[in-house]
Length: 151
Image (cartoon, rainbow, N blue to C red):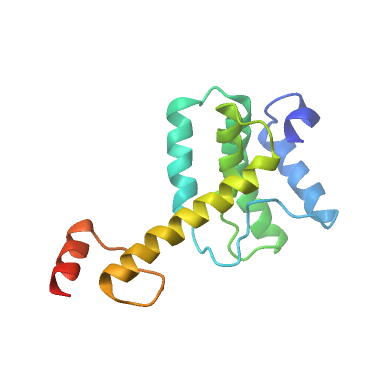
């Protein structure tokens, strides 16, 4: 939508006005203002670093990068989002598109598959530790080896 409206990467002022127009029309900025995030989603940060290395000249990536630099300030000023940081969905689509996955209906499928893979790995860890399924804390592989060896 932004690319088509501006014929490419908009200026900061154009993007700022576009964000204001979107919010004033009662719409949201997708991928921003997540209810749980208090900082930028670390997955967003990792995808952004990857995108910077492999497709920094891609127009969609440049737009996503500019949105990250401009929109949080607009959201804070608007008061729409207390914590206006992006989640992984604010960048994953442009990377998928860059690498040839242009059929948008598959993006939700990929999201579901990635969630299933996370649950499967968590189930294995939980079984290894003899625990119920839970949100694990961040631990090293060495910690896991030691914990399993104790059990």
